[in-house]
Length: 418
Image 1 (cartoon, rainbow, N blue to C red):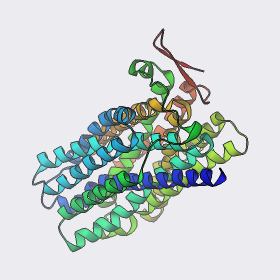
Image 2: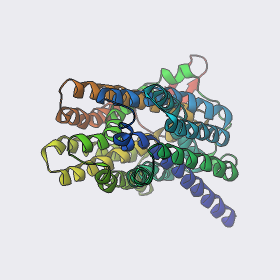
Image 3: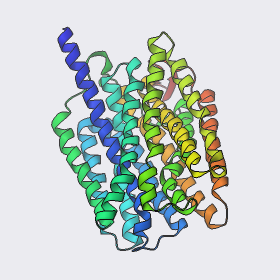
Image 4: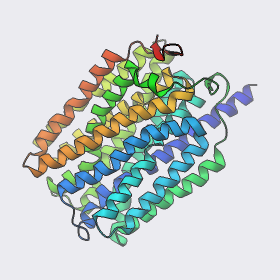
């Protein structure tokens, strides 16, 4: 029995590592355009406003398929669903390398967003299927650290490809990595998680119940605000370094990875700290909210970035990226904590939908503000305040987090939060 339990635990953490690799590929894919933008603009003219709209194209379909992908995973299962979305987004990433102008590039970004939208709902399902409550935030922290791995590798590897060849090769290499992962996933992943962690027999909560849930709406609203800031940092940091700090591709490749490395540390430590609080006797509610609040408290540091030398600006970005990815892993753990497994993908999808819409909206706003003369100081001030507002919304709407924390009343069609 003990040996079987050990094998089961090892298998669970192997799947966590496998999903982290997928998320790393996802973030490498989405960084291809921002990091290679200076090379691409020598072939295809792209203004600041157009750059903002290209990111909005990605995030608009990303938002829609965050919801659709979550529902798809709940319907056909984690194994088939994750393989399907990975194949889709890998082919879309490669398609960008064929672009001769903005129309095909924008189309490819739309298709890329459609595929990547299912990534985190799939990750949340794996955590819910395979890990008990006291290990979930650690597991999600490891998975979320994949965002840092992909983002850290993107500047130097993309810089190397650009130095050795054409910018189009960046997209072909990235797409090929995703297709190889899909083969690995189909060969390795089998079935639902073990024992009491698996709740696949539970009925899923209808959309009407989820959309009327104060907790779901609150979490989605908080993600709208926090991801507005995150996608601004993610997509605009290389461009900020190019435009405002005089960096070239070599400088971005050399130094641009540092904040993303800090984000990986934040992903892991935020999840570990929340799990540690639970293991030492604190409630799920206290453990998640304290870690979220501490993460949000770091974010206003970005307001100082335009006022300091570039070396210290990278330190401030690192602090902010640390806090953001600690926050991100924790907020995406909550659906696995408090909702039935058959609805975890859908709930995670709705929360992610809010985040992607926020990112798309603020990306366009950022591009238009820069176009009309606003400086990065204004944008960093706005972005630095959003996580604090998001944490306030969570405190007001989430109630006491505990498992099981929801019941669906089939008579009234309401989601009852205990």
